Length: 292
Length: 339
Image 1 (cartoon, each protein chain N blue to C red):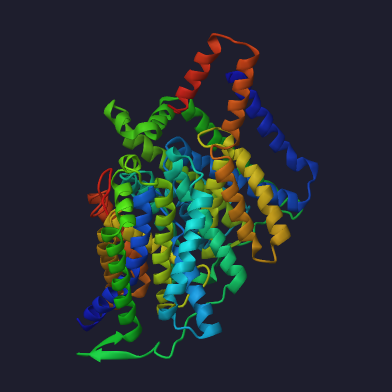
Image 2 (image 1 turned 45 degrees about the horizontal axis):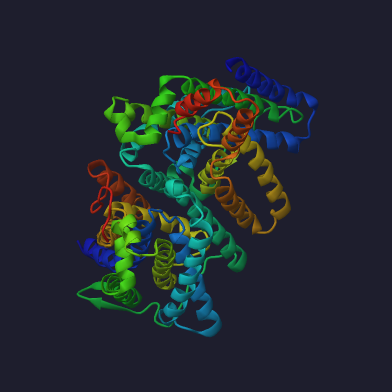
């Protein structure tokens, strides 16, 4: 029982970071109908960036987030303009998948060249401090990471619901043709939306470096988990991504703490298959046109 | 038309069958063996990724399944004549198909992009399993198979001919399906699955058939690879780069064509060996590979074979304005499903 509750606590705290990454992923899908397989690579790249900022300049990873998000936003916009925009509209979905996979490999290659493949972790002074509440351990870093993720997701919601740009994005998601007719510059919304997705990966990545050791190959583990979350919640739905992250990450943590860590890596795949068996669209997915 | 394509096939396989007789250097034969492996796998991937339009990114999982099946079997059985692993291949193929079927039955309820996601997740889960199930797979230590007892001078030959045979089978299956109702059904699935289902095409059956044949063949190549290498490690047996190579070769050559994947495998395997040779020591290999991938996707999204066919068709039409030709071309493009 103790192990179960400890697993639940850990799972919910971790879910925040995954929800953040996944909401960027699902946002990109909503706008462009492109499944971004490079999202995991974006996260790890930003983890490396904050690792470098921490070791070279002593900047705390939490404080480095504004820097990494701006850098990754720019990288995301450039990637969209150079690699995704030229694809023809009718085969953008299929080719986009492969192109973003290639982008992930490119980023992996660049990271391998720049930081080699040894495993890195960001060890701040507070990395190991934790509270014990009613016998359950709560790591300080995870709590901060959770709060930060909730905050950034909140900002994302504000951006989408309260600004002109957000309205343009939501219009594009719901009906690209009508949005264009009403004067939304679809290509720019796509480019900036892709940047926004990369920026959420950056915020999550800075925190990821604090929580887990990583190397250039870590994005493979990450992307399979992220994709399961996004499909589970329904592609294109941010609310779905949050629920998906909660389900996946708590079940993984609970299986790890009660049964064995070996099988926890398989948990999310089994959940994914079960959900698809009943509901091929995912929990909150909509058939054709989405709404964020 | 039938005569021409038969002649092309005979010439191609005749040439390949003669090649080892020229006393080629070992590195050339080694490269040819790998080219054939990729040609079989791309051709097999083409059945489901090209013809049916379901881009599976999980084929490397089945490659690994075949590799582990052969490696595990020969942990407990010894190799005498050296040909035992080859006799086992049909069973490996059936195993791959049997594992693939239930997964496909669930994954193919979704459409192309979600399908790709489920299959790529399968790939990473399979890799994690190979690492973690230490009691079976020995984890990161890997598994060794007894060395194949072939003479050093002609070591590659048995592998070469078995792969050549497998390529003939794969291309034969592709050719037969292109000429039959199965090919038309697959094309209709790619074109508009709901409409196809509506007019009574057995959509589910034909999709599952294509997938299980495809992953079965891939598992067989995995088995041959494990025996050829003599030892396997999880990170190489279940490698995302294998998936990428297969997909890239098919795209480069031309999806849903008979010769495209083979052409793509030939071009890319040589390029890959060249990259490995020139950047092997450094880590720039991955960057070079990814850049080639991106350039192919952006410049030749339809692949070499369809682009050449288009060009030739246009040229022929310019030479003779024939009333028969357009209808022939139209019916051919209809049969290929580019509706």
